[in-house]
Image 1: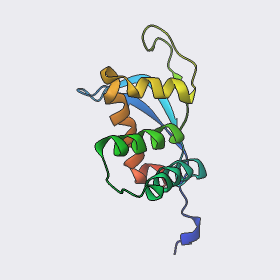
Image 2 (image 1 turned 135 degrees about the horizontal axis):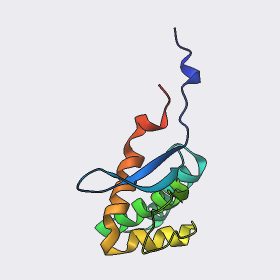
Image 3 (image 1 turned 90 degrees about the vertical axis):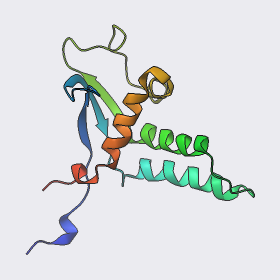
Image 4 (image 1 turned 135 degrees about the vertical axis):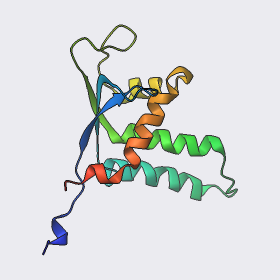
Length: 127
């Protein structure tokens, strides 16, 4: 029998994939577990802001903001394979740089990729 208490989520690294071909692009994102303190804190901060408002109307913008905050909290860094680059360079990781990239309409697909990977809970558990 398995000791269920030994089943815990852990961080993982994912390689950005081309949206049409699913080919790895050599840009690796280091993701914190969705159950990590950092990610849960970002989720609670957004929820607390929503609960503090007297008018509880959800908007598409507020939901996008929540997803963005979660992504920024979840990505702890990135690395590039030799020869891979973004806009001709290999930018140093920072939450501000990540925010800039995922807010750019031309790179919404990167945001969508990260959001999807964060939703793949099984990937954060070893089998």
